[in-house]
Amino acid sequence: MKNQKLIGLLYLTIAVVGGFSMGYAPMELIDIHNLPQTFTNIQENILLFKLSILGDGMVIVFELFITILLYHFFKQTDTVWNEIAKYSRLAMTFIMAINMLYYIIPLYNIHTTYASLEIFNFCMQAHFYTVYIWEVFFGIHMIALSILTCKHPQFSKILSILLFIGGIGYLLDCAIYFTEIENSIIITSSNILLTIAAISEISFAVLLLVKKTSKV
Image (cartoon, rainbow, N blue to C red; front, side):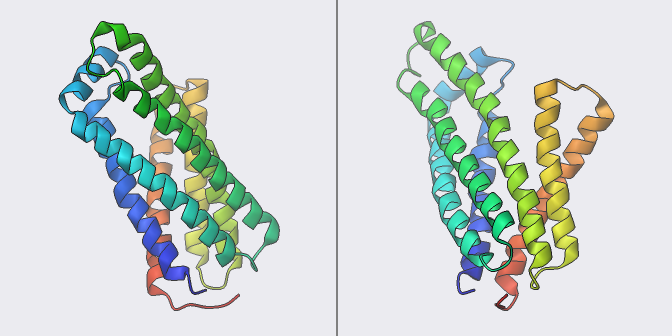
């Protein structure tokens, strides 16, 4: 497929931009257990917060493109699982777009004081919870993608297994949060699976970039 390398490039771009906007920036600014301090952090680092929102917006646009490209890439591989992969990723992207609003809304009153704290607290909590919702759909997408790569002659079974394990990792992470599981073994296992998820996605992107194009 002629768009193979573009898919790989988009995957790596999302990893870098998303790593900043959904990883680094929130770690620097947001403490969901201390929202007054979070309010102060954002007031004092408003540029970083705005860059985080910009990064989220870029990720959403890239996700739309990559969903379309992946759908066409695997079009001849398996119709049912390709549809599941497409709609689950689209659902994830739609939820991420809604979630971005929970960052945008506080920008209008972030420079005021306690009058805006109720709205701010609601938005930060809503954003935190919604992340776990889109993770459910991404977990489903990764499982579908693992089956598609397994059936596609261009990819190894090892990659398919890693993608499948990564998808289970996302679903387990959501299950732990929504059921409030506090078992350290289960939590550690979830973190390990999420690490595998990241490795499998980067491996998938690299293979798309370096492998020669082949038709199904």
